[in-house]
Structure formats: C-alpha cells, structure tokens
Length: 252
Image 1 (cartoon, helix red, strand yellow):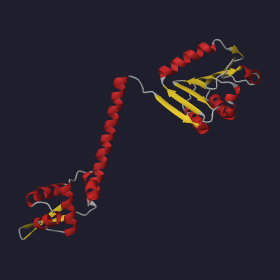
Image 2 (image 1 turned 90 degrees about the horizontal axis):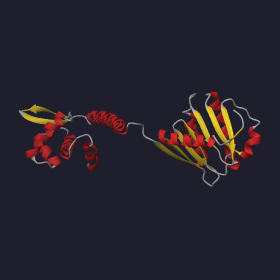
Image 3 (image 1 turned 45 degrees about the horizontal axis):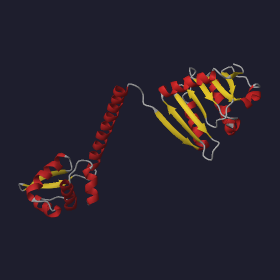
Image 4 (image 1 turned 30 degrees about the vertical axis):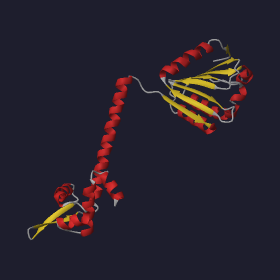
C-alpha cells in the first residue's frame, strides 16, 4: 500500500486520496461512511477528498434513494494521469534546456570547452575517430611527433587516417624525428608538408581546427587527451608555427 501511495504521489495524488481510491477499489461502490471505515479517514475530510478524486477522473458517483454512491474509475484511468505527468515533465525538461542554453550564450558569449580523456589503444583510436569526423577541406592538421619507437605501434592506423585526410583534401604539417628522414624521403603527398627535428619526447600532440590532442602509448596504459577550445587551440597553433619555422625542411 505504501509503495502504491509513493508512486501515486508522483502524479499529484496525496496520501489520503490514495487511501480513498484504494478503499473504493476494494469496496467497488460505497457511501461515505463505508469509505471512511475502509480507509481510516475522518468523515469531516472525506467529501473534499472525493471531490478532488472526481475532478481527477478517478472517482464517479450516482444517486440511489437520494444518497450519493461513489464508485472508482477503472485502474486504467491512472494511465492517463501518468501520461499527462510525463508530457508535463517533458515540456519542463525542454523549457529548462532551452533556458540554460540561452543563459550560457548570454553569460559566456562563446561555446563551452570540451575536455575528454581516453585510455588504451581502443580509447586512442576512438579519439581519432572523433577527430576524423570533424575534418573538412578547410582543416589543417599540425602534428608534433615523437621519437620513432613512440608511435610505431599505430603506424597502420595512422595510414588509414592520412588516407581519409587526403580524400578530404585536408592539409597536413607533420614534424618527424630526424631518424625518420630516410623513410619519409620515399613518400610523397601533395597535401602534406613534412619537417624534421631532434625529438626525444614520448608524447605526441597536434592541433586540428579548434581541437588539441595529446597522446602517448609507450607506457603500460596508453593515454590520450582531447581538448576542444578555440583559445587553447590558437595558442598551441602559434607555438607549433614557431617550432615549425625552425625545422629542417624536406619537401612540400
């Protein structure tokens, strides 16, 4: 009984209204005295409660010998109340969501930043799938590589990424470690500029549009971070270009 009362409370039915309705379901039809005895509700309150239940469509009545006889509506009538409550909540949810969006735009004046953390090789690949999904012909990918052994395990995966980048005609600027110079001489890509430097870092990072990523997979647990923030991306892009200007050039 208490469990039902709690559930009915969610659709605006009070404890006394629940007890009255349940009493009528048990009795079938009854006068107020019988309802009071079954529900334990005082006779001074019963008429107000019954009126509310009638207005909610859960109780009806008829006269017999000038006496009011009350009857419960079918339990299916509760379904309508639950549907109405659900519709109301959905409208409120949409209203709150719209208001929050307007509030954020008004107060912040710019989109919120997004920060994501990934673990494992599957996680790193998931990050790249997200980056790939946002590439456009106007994008430029700037890659600050790492020493050779730090990225070899994903070379095949990166080949797929660069194939997609070429298909979309996304421009690339990639800084390789010096030890990769002989290998890269054999490759030609009209959409990619390459450069070389003494790289001893294990963490790779790069900038694509308003995204900055950092990753490493030389440790026991590979990890990656993806930051979507125009201000941060612009800063990393500026740093990248400063380093790029000092690279050892190869070809364009």
